[in-house]
Length: 479
Ligand code: FAD
Ligand code: NAD
Image (cartoon, rainbow, N blue to C red):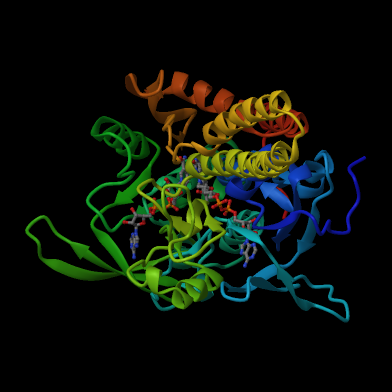
């Protein structure tokens, strides 16, 4: 079992915020023996977000893509302290994090402070709504596990309400209109999953809805999936057409009510017109916005005054304007897209950085002692021996200190688009060969890529079992 806490006063305290892609990748590779490690996150599990869209329809059970944080930290050499709480304020000057227990069950103490020597901020981002009225109150998001469960409940509720006795045709059409806003990968993958759910299960369970169930994807820009190549964008749009998913590009949502979205459509001649579209389910997937706790830290630091989308960091992920504070993943701003791939590579990089910082400190202490021994050595031979030892250690110290800056290696982009098809822009051999593919083989690749990425053996087996279960018996129909 790992050595127990309390904190060791001879070691630096490293506080890690969040339990997502960035922070968990750091924790997995970090040698915890070198630090007092404290993790603060309101979520006591890691969530494998690439498979979250599959949970909205029950293709995959939500538990299969959650990995308990306690399982992850249990295997560390030295115990890691975990607090289920939200960081509410980072005081860069006093070097403390204020945290609050945001869960339902609270004890007498539910707010306190944690001091740090080093801090890693990996709190991710929240859903962007651009202040559009009615979004927060009426739309479902797709970021957390509860969001996927809510969507699943809502889809079934819309269907049951549409088949309620004496429902008018117009109301049926509204209730069975599933609208997705945002043609990024989140919106596209959800649309694909919803199509599969309808074709493979819903259509059979409730034949009455067959003709009225519609899926519309609304995107403000001229095309969907801007990060993919032109050929794959066209392939996706064509596949959606075949799947009867209506893609409405150049259509910007301006307002949301409990039954309608109000959009502004730009026509080919540049003229605009307004339209009201009724919906039963509205899924909002328009990307990321900065979390409050991050915005607050940015306001404390003059070096962050020009940063809008998150914490500006240097090449070593140190937050500009601070010392000993790092940020990674979706809460930071770099030249890379806010993806799991980037966040996890940044986590690995920071683990290497902390591991080598600890080694550096140990060598520096050794060097100090050797130098003192050399000064007080009795004869010249002993002095020379110690000097040689100092030189060797000095060389290894400068080698360790030469950690090169963070560099991202892009493995490619992959998205599921429904009907057993996926699109992939893959970089082979470190980007030497790059290929863009779409289709059923790509889908097989997509599945195997995700199974091999899902972290633990337990999760891999659970995901494979879910896929098999869905193919063999269909999805569950209750809720
Ligand atoms: P997150 O993984 O979001 O983790 C943030 C953590 O911080 C969470 O544990 C959260 O509970 C915690 N937290 C929040 N507030 C606080 C607070 N105040 N104090 C302390 N902790 C806090 N990327 C890909 O590369 N490939 C994909 O296929 C892919 N698919 C995706 C599918 C979906 C549906 C979504 C939503 C995203 C997908 N992404 C994908 C993007 C990817 O999930 C994010 O880029 C990634 O999660 C960012 O990692 P992170 O560690 O910065 O944040
Ligand atoms: P995104 O930022 O990639 O896309 C959001 C889309 O919403 C944009 O195309 C934008 O033009 C549109 N939009 C914004 N406001 C709108 C409005 N009012 N009306 C209509 N459309 C509007 O967001 P995302 O898809 O949530 O992705 C977030 C990040 O996560 C990205 O970096 C993405 O690459 C990553 N991700 C990757 C995968 C994958 O690789 N398979 C899956 C999901 C997410």
